[in-house]
Image 1: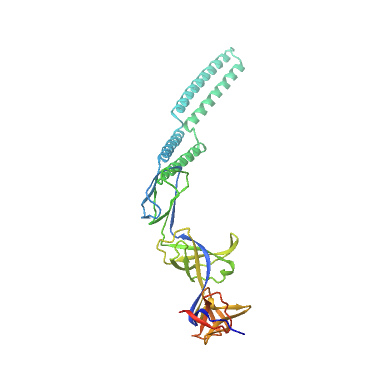
Image 2: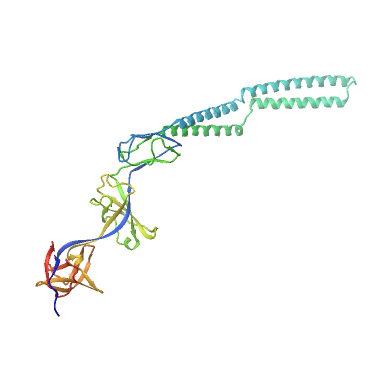
Length: 387
């Protein structure tokens, strides 16, 4: 059978290398030290003192809100407290000034009625002795005197101790509630202007100056961007390969020339559904963050789950398969020799560990420069060799 004409090929030399076997996953950047400012009450953003990306110091003012409503709330709470305290004091003193005057007037009238009833009874008893008054008239007078005395006694008792503990307790509770409301209003006023509790970088501002915001709305986020972690999501089949401390490389599409490094801090403890995937959540510490990896960024992480040190290997593109068998094309005397090989555990996207079939220094073909098929015995010439 006639052989084809000489084919130009790329080659590589078989040698010993370390092969890292990674597992990839997607992840989200999370700051470890983060401050999210919220509006303590509805109102307008009066002034923004910072911009996104600006570094701030601890205690620095970030946002000033319109405090007119907060001040009104303090005044209203003060008035409510004064009213509650006044009501309690009046009750403890027996009532308001008007109530005390009414009590005094009622007792004076009751005393007059008692005296009149006593005088009437004495007169009727004297007339009865002379036969000029009946027994029924005397009995009626006695009943009238008894009722007058009972009413006077009741008024005197109420005047000396008009309100008991059951009357005072609700007003004491109202005073306590008014105190708490005033403290809350004063705190809301004090917190109306936002200051940074930590040094860091402003990385998110969803509002603009003069915007009206509801109570609880987010105003901005500050974080220490030199202390971050990655929450990564590994597919279930890969979870068993993970271990604490394994080295990690981190890639971000927005900065393709930059690589960050870290290690696994916490391996997954359970499997959850994440969209259409079943994954394990893994926490990764970033060791060389310097502020250029932003919070909530989607990144790719690669965990080195296994390393094969100083093993005989070839470029991955030199390896071919034929069913369950692996082979490479080795160059011997200027021609291809199809050589069966055994592949070891060291296998990644760029290198393949060879445990049988090759020797150090052998020259293997990684590909032709044209669309020509590579076959056993083909005459070739080397146009480029990998180092």
